[in-house]
Length: 118
Image (cartoon, rainbow, N blue to C red):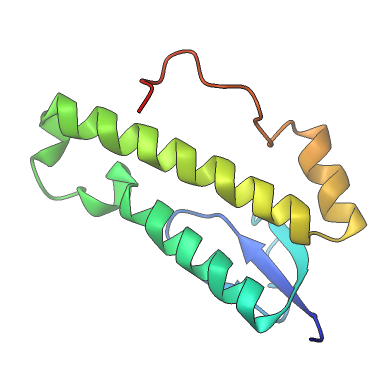
């Protein structure tokens, strides 16, 4: 199946927006990937799942952020999702994207010391 080029930004407000064109905004970090429709669907699902655990966005006007057990669980799930996203961006990324991710150490293959084992 043919792969197409897409641009992914991880801005919390627009994390679930994957674009076929690069957005002309110098403040956005956009990761260029090449993906099949199936790979793109997997990435979209992962982005949506991860954004569901972003406490800042979802609970902005609620008191849920005062429940420390919920906050901690969401933080762990959010970080786990971000790790998976960066792994997938690296896998699908162009050489420039792979270089960018490596240089910024955005892939995390070590087990987190402060996270609970499940």
